[in-house]
Amino acid sequence: MDLADKLMNVIVVTVSLLAPFFLHQYRSLKAFISTARTLFKENVTGEVVLITGASSGIGEHLAYEYARRGARLALVARRKHRLQEVNEICDIIGSPETVYILGDVSNIEDCKRFVDATVDHFGQLDHLVTNAGVAPVCLFEDYEDITKALPAMDINFWGSAYSTYFALQHLRKSKGKIIVISSCSSWVFAPRTGFYSASKAALISFYEAMRIELGTQIGITIVTPGFIDTEMTEGKCLSKEGTLEVDREMRDVQVNVMPVETAERCAKAIVESACRGDKYLTVPSWMHTTVLWRVFFPEMMDWWNGVMLMAGAGSSSRDAPSKKLLHVATGIKQLFSLEAFLTPSK
Ligand SMILES: NC(=O)c1ccc[n+]([C@@H]2O[C@H](COP(=O)([O-])OP(=O)(O)OC[C@H]3O[C@@H](n4cnc5c(N)ncnc54)[C@H](OP(=O)(O)O)[C@@H]3O)[C@@H](O)[C@H]2O)c1
Ligand SMILES: *[C@@H]1O[C@H](CO)[C@@H](O)[C@H](O)[C@H]1NC(C)=O
Image (cartoon, rainbow, N blue to C red; front, side, top):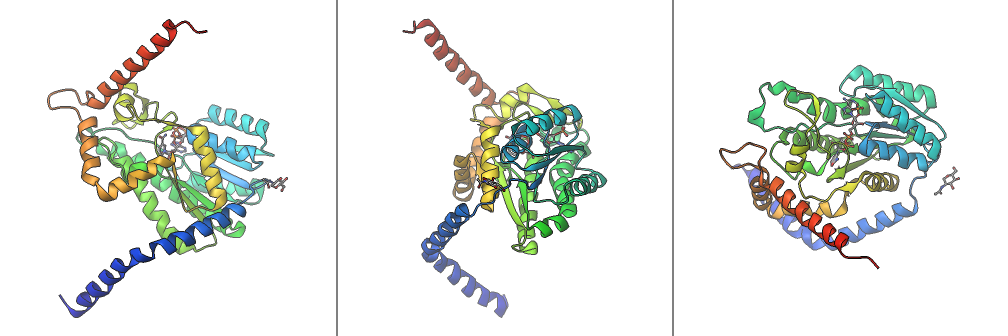
């Protein structure tokens, strides 16, 4: 070990050991700043917001939440009929003007086109919400063609990076914000969703670096949702053939008895957080405690997800204990509702 290394050992270790003593002051300062930000939170009335993946789920409800606050919206996704419906509702509930643009975020030309179209139409861009995403759900070894998992990165990661790239110059002008929809899956790992976790963790690493590159001119809110009630948690996933499919049985394995938050509440929390200028948001907030588990008891977490989500040797990969647990829980629930039904109400 050379001298520099020895020196670093002494300095870095000493500073790291001393740092916790200043944690209290550091947290007080952060609490103060956060309160100040709540007082001066952004009013998005009349501002222009571009949302990718606005045709269902979290993106759809983000559109409604921004519309209620009077923002002008550009909605992007691939399903036209769904976008049309969301657009109509936004017009009714308070958006002065909403447009929708068909586009595939994994296609760089599409990303340039929808960003340009938004700015051509509205003359500005204040918030970019990169929300479009898909979830491949398949054991790694079960892929017959591994390239069928590419859309996870192409849509979830590159789709966000492309949109951001073309939006930057406009966001600089407006001192705007980027709201990135990552996922708790970036630190809570489960079998079958390795590519999903990887794509969501990539988003976090990338936008943390962007924060430093872009400085304070453009705000970045990294959102990590837990389970949210959307088409995705209803079982829509990217199959091993690379197509979007609804697999209810797989849903029962992966989501099982976990409580799911409504997309409305999730969207409201996201817009609040973005307007406050938060750097991070986890919804539902209790999911944030899993960070502590990841730091202090990572083996426990992985062991639990292995036991619950992997099927025993010899049985179908779908026969995981989590599915049985769900069946038991559903049975108990039915028993209670049956009892409520049999008990005469007054
Ligand atoms: N639900 C959860 O529990 C959960 C948890 C953590 C994070 N998230 C993340 O939240 C985001 C929204 O998901 P969701 O739960 O609301 O699921 P969802 O209802 O399936 O919504 C996904 C949205 O992304 C769009 N999309 C997919 N591929 C696209 C592409 N290539 N180009 C453009 N749009 C595309 C879909 O529209 P089209 O199919 O019409 O293009 C749809 O509007 C995703 O990034 C997801 O990973 C969800
Ligand atoms: C936001 O601004 C609009 C006008 O620009 C105003 O009418 C509205 O009351 C403001 N909303 C809040 C919550 O301050």
